[in-house]
Image 1: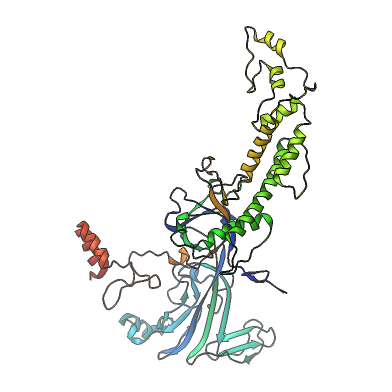
Image 2: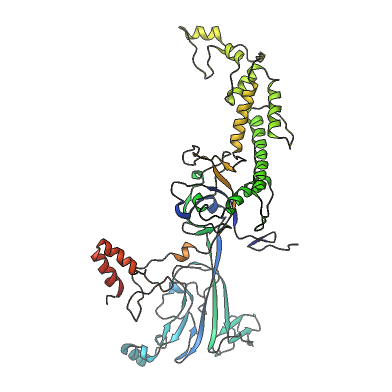
Amino acid sequence: DVLADSSFTQEGHLALGQNVLCVFMSWEGGNYEDAILISERLIQEDKFTSIHIEKHEIEARDTKLGPEEITRDIPNVGEDMLKDLDETGIIRIGAEVRPEDILVGEVAPKGQGELTAEERLIIAIFGKKAEETRDVSLRVPHGEKGKVVDVKVFSRFKYQCVRCKAVYNYSKRPDRTMCDRCDGDLVRLPSDELSAGVNQLVRVYIAQKRKIMEGDKMAGRHGNKGVISKILPEEDMPFLPDGTPVDIVLNPLGVPSRMNIGQILETHLGLVGHHLNCSFVNPAFEGSTEKEILGELDRLARHLRRRTLTNLVNSELHMGMEFAEDAEPEEMLEQIKAELRTYDARRLEQISRIVAGPPVASVVELEQPFSRNGGEPEGADAQEDLTAVAPPDASAAIPAPEDFDYDGVVAQIKVRAWERAGIDPATGKCKLRDGLSGDYFHQPVTVGYIYMMKLAHLVDDKIHARSTGPYSLVTQQPLGGKAQFGGQRFGEMEVWALEAYGSAYTLQEILTIKSDDV
């Protein structure tokens, strides 16, 4: 039995994604070439929101010029940059950080060769020690932000106050062994295991909450991956006959050439499982057959038709009928027909008007010259005509005509209920409406629930831009890659493309000014 679930399991099963209502159709070019359209609802409900924790660490080492030191006293850094650092120069837990913010303040000794003549003169006169160090602090990398959730400090010299139990980490043996808070004595604790030459190690963990956005990559269980091209408002998404908007729109052209039909079968069974509250297990090579899936779709269609028929008869037609839970839709229609035979002509006409069925002759004759559409009475003097041909008392029962077309009314009730149920059990397709116009789409489309996952290829990690930046010492060309804050490579074939257009000035700029023009 399962004792506890983690953030990526449910009832002991691996659960890395979400079940979403999906439709396979093209939508105004928005899902061209494996692009994916998703609903804003997925963002509002945090369906694909993930928390990312990045680890950043820095070491204080022994160097030839002297030991590096973790400190708050950093040269040429303003107080506003130090506001979230504690007295030892380490960022506090809970601080919001952005690119280039200091996480751990560290200084390293500066060699005499690195000092200018003026700096050496000032040190010789004033004996300033701060200017002999350079800033080698740990900073938040470019393009990252978040909240500090944990800080771990490992050191060679670890002390604890005997009175207030405060722990102190030092990179070198302290001058005084007194507690800064309560003046209690410090006792040395066992040192942490560190590499040779390392006196202190600080690890900072930054957490970031990321909602799904355009440019993020998603995939199903069948290699059907794609990139989100647009996030649509919920009201603009295609919607089912019962008004439910879909969550995600995939391109049907991604299926035939790749032959991963499993995603279509999953869509059908997902819809059945959602409405009938059941689950299906389909092992590889031993999954459900086409006949079994069609059988399940038929079971679903009967369930939906039973539900829509009950709602239509009782909520709209106010017939107040009760049906058996396992009644077949056709049996229910026969029951409705029998109930209609007990009604008088006026009640039949009322129901027939609602479902656009055949008129009841006796009522229509009585209401003449009033038309079925509520037209004006005919005649020279409208007031006299109204008095002369006003309908009789509404409470008076009018017997139904013997030749009334009960089958026609039942047929209209059936058409309306079947349309609202939506699903066609022979194909598993459904007629959807366009969220923008409210009109039906021209063709029925496959709709159902599929399992989608957000992949680690997030646009926030990949987006990159540069105007000027670091250059290679050897070639004097810009470095490459986001990590080095590099430029975009303009390769051989790209040069050919510009040559084909005869873009001489653009070529000259790219090959010289933007490259290795020294």
